[in-house]
Length: 180
Image (cartoon, rainbow, N blue to C red):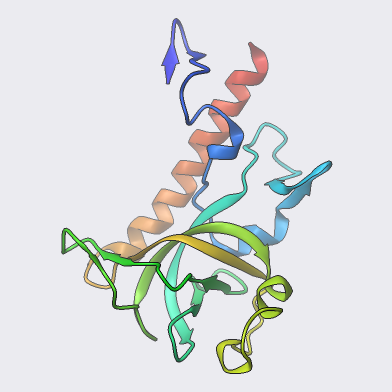
């Protein structure tokens, strides 16, 4: 939280970069690079005042789902898709229902995915052959949250605005912190 003329309250759980989860188009992952000395964090070299992050939020259409639903290929149309890797106990949330469901979204569903970034090769290593989709994805996300937004009418148009606005706000926040 910002207090006392815009200074960051260090006790705020969201003040540290590790807690930043930027909303991104999948194409933006191509320009993200690991932070030197800390390969679990990423940053955008062309945006030096931008955030450092280990997880991202992407949205798109499920274009492939493994038989057991543990791997989804999510494509937002901006670039290479991402592979969303779900743990067996992961639950899907629908905004039209108040509870989490055990049902996994299938091909054609529009989903929001929040997860930790890893390489596709990293997730292929432990997967059964039938769980590993053939895809041009270069990144995978170990899913911490999956929301099925299929029933939301304005989901895609709103997402396009949200990504641009959220990234602008994060960049301004970090620039302000650099000057103080």
